[in-house]
Length: 451
Image 1 (cartoon, rainbow, N blue to C red):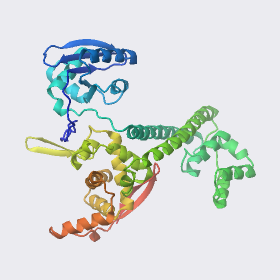
Image 2: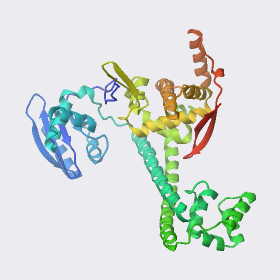
Image 3: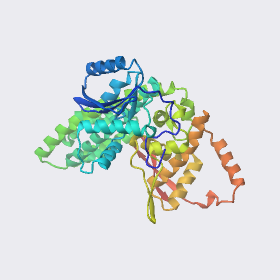
């Protein structure tokens, strides 16, 4: 993978002898296509409706015309309805083009920024014919692995929606019922949701009998009697934030909506997590991925779908580092050069390795020492975690390629053997820092360093 993070593959799969090449500019209703037949410089153009019936008729016409020979198709997306429609035909070989690649290519030849759908189809066809060695063919993984990939990404989207609702609920409660944010840590919990549905305001909550409230807390698995008594005392001593019924009335309506939506999301996330766990543990590489410190049941499936089952997809650890966006980008102009974080990358995959590296700090001694050294060198938290993730990927790739589970003992032995062959380096014992932790989104993450 080059520094720009392009779609080149270090070990490209063998390419078929194509009978024709097609560039498609996709749209919601009508797709425009440009076609070049092998051995001809002429370009045919046409339109294709975005329906399964129209696509099937178009592919059948191509199949009959070229006697079922392979056809290469370039399109400006890796996922989406058109990719799904075309993927079921074995005759078609899909080559996704990054939208930024096509946009810059268009701007290079049309500085006036002229643009239309047929022109984009022609440009896609030109990139496919002239620069196909710089494109990566879409070779889907197994059905089980792709299902797991969609599930983990879907779960993350649901978690993001729940977080947005949690922020909205927090803002509403700050308006008229701020005590709820002090009494309970998680406003997304079933306890808080059920309490607000039953007693949406402080006035209504204070009217409830002590026995009723105590029974409510016990039904929500609050077995600590001291904690229950403290909540009861807090409820009795609380002071109403506002008596403005316009504020209270409008806020409680929206609070109830948020609470019900959060309940649905909480159940959906729980059901999806069970399916993810079941599907991940059925994969042959589960034990390998799960052996890494900090991965756990939540992050292991996410790492697994990033790598997939196709070992030929990545030729080196550098390919993985660039593809997932952990590797930085170097820019140079004249006598100036600078390094910055990679922006053009799959954000979910980068977030996966970033979160995994952060979790490994707590469970792996050498990872913690590496992180502390980075912070001692004036790196901020996220830069230090990215540096650790960069190092982890090198170890991870070797284990994944060789199908060997990770072992702290084996890795530390390799480090000692390597150190014995090189110059002495300062020991980690000189670094005297402590890492303080905080809970964030169900994970523990470093909060700050103290000396």
